[in-house]
Length: 296
Image (cartoon, rainbow, N blue to C red):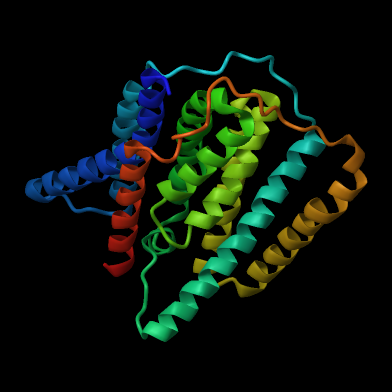
């Protein structure tokens, strides 16, 4: 294998671990600084620290790391119809919710067996948030920057190995990136749809819009739940579920003949894309951070 190509694969592997380590380090240092200055750390401040450490510092470091890694050749953009956009949206959301429910059931079962409560820092943070910062950071800022990182930067670098490989790799990285056991599978399966949409349209704006709407729906559900509006929450869940079932089951059957396959042409060999020191480093970092988040 060409040493330059192996080096490229290692850099791609290091990117996830570097994002997580650098963001955690900057976040912790800024917390220490705020405590030293006597500034109280509110939910709003926590959101700001997280956004700066991850979407500014970590993103710039990864972009610098991958600056010489080859991009896929620019392909013409394909317009996505409203009907198809809505289908992708509810397929992603529906499958994501199913995976989140499945994961939570497993966590509940493990908690009962181990006789230990496992904390979910993200759920706790969202539940304690007021609507404005929740929508601003979770439903708008987060999706935009996460799409720029994973579908704008990482996917573009990985498509030289074939679109299917790029979709799988990016989606796994997106799931692991959350370092939260209740979100990993949820994020990974949604990542598959988001990456697929970008590969089909060569346009990141669609994945950004889908991601924003999904996070907005989750934020609205959290706001309704926190407000104790059980009746409204029930109606909301039923409506979303029915629309999702229609998107996942009815639409695919109706349009089965019009399915379009994505390209899987690859410029380079896929070997060592996962089995390299960079990717192994990132996986170790994810395991450590995820374990710590569960135990604390």
